[in-house]
Amino acid sequence: MYTFSFHRMKTIVSYSIATGFGSGYSRYMPGTIGTIWAWIMFLILDYLFIDIVLFIIILTSFLVGLVTSGFVENHLKKKDASEIVIDEIVAFWLILFFLPRWDESLSTEQAIDYSYLIIQIQAFVIFRIFDIFKPWPTNIIDKKVRGGLGIMLDDIIAAFQTLFVLSIFFRFGLNPGLLAYENFL
Image (cartoon, rainbow, N blue to C red; front, side, top):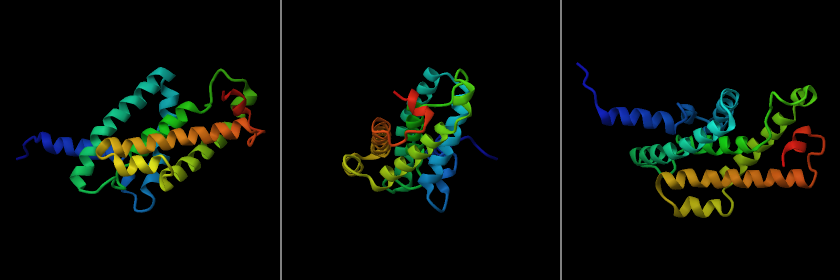
């Protein structure tokens, strides 16, 4: 006979969330797989919710990620374990939230244009570079801040670094043919 165990339930839920519902268990490039999973989920969430609700979901996911990633890190006894991808998920959701997105109110010309996809692909590549190589100040946060906060914060900083680089691309015309950049700022 099975008896309910709060600790067991907490472990299952924490692992499910922290590993991006299993995407972090990928044998190859779990952070990249987790980011792709985040991208797909964001497209669904963006379709379902208005911006304020979407932002609340991202903020709530960050707070839940603090707790679950810290719990799983302690349970695995590995610092910033590769299986933990909630940090990549929340950070990439934040990036996508601030990028231009397809909107039903746009003209047909803009709606059919693939600029949004190109911008998101650029964001994906730039974010993964920042997340993998951890340039300053991300590397300092990664080394100095422990637990769930350290796991989550270095990816949030990488997200803002990504948005900064993309804004430079826009300002200096490195993507002149992209219609979506006309609405970026």
